[in-house]
Amino acid sequence: MVLLLAACAARVLAHNPMTSWAVARLHADRVELEVELSSESAWTLMGGSLDVAPDVGARLPKLKELAPSLYEVSAGGSQLAPTSVEVELREEDGVGFVLVYPRSSGAPLRFDAAFLRSLPAGHKTALTLKDADDKVMRTEVLTAAASSLEAKADDSSSPAAGGRVASFWSFLKLGVGHILTGYDHLLFLLGLLVACRRFSTAAKIITCFTLAHSLTLALAALDVVSLPSRLVEPLIAASIVFVAVENIVRKGEPGWRWALTFTLGLVHGFGFAGALKEAGLGAGGAGLLVPLFSFNLGVELGQAGVAAVVLPLLWKLRDLPAFESYGRNVISAAIALAGAWWFVTRLLF
Image (cartoon, rainbow, N blue to C red; front, side, top):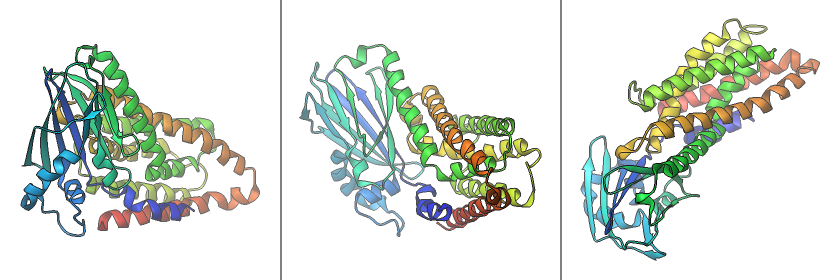
């Protein structure tokens, strides 16, 4: 079952080139919508295959035709058409779009990221609302299933607290969802917990993992330290193999496992940061602290929920003589094979 999970998730968990973000600046008479897509995202939206290198530079006219369909912008229920569209190639292999829409004061606005429904499952984007003075009002994560954000007519004059609350919940849900669908992180955690015989040991390991990945998540998200995902993703897979093999080689509770957990947890933090940046954290001048804190809190809540389910189950299984003799090694071997599969696929794809 573990191997099947690894095979099904291999492509999902590999480096995701589909990144994007957007900023909507609300003026009294107009809305300026700035969207940035990775070249892979833009290429896919134009019907291109990722089996060949994207060549968006040669298709700027096509991109300009595509621009109005990225977001469906409406005011008071009536869809708006852009009065101007600009497209440019940007640094780091991105494509920028700037669209201007007319705005009637008093009409609530709705932004629907329609392009998400044309990208591979799981793609997310962050949309930031700013007022006419370029002050951040709110940032939310949008998905294909929840692709819209609504702005009331008086949003630009309302206190920022409401926007921070909306951003908090949006990134909290993103964090919970990321850990619950982050099968590599979950298998790493399972590999750590399957060797724990005491609650104190499990608590120490979970605490060290939390501290470690929170540290590198913050450092990477704030651009203090940066590692390419092409390096981070194979290292995460290698950490899974290392822990699983140690479970098989060492009997009983491995000594100093908390130190190993902290060291390897630093690598996983870079993986979490990659997920945040793919969603557009901090892009376009969006705020960092609230999304960073709430995303990390979501990860911790999801992790705690998983541990609360897995630990009692493992301790119950240890009452069975067969599990005590073979269960730990069988589970660890399956985890090691899954990690090895991920390691190879992440190096090659």
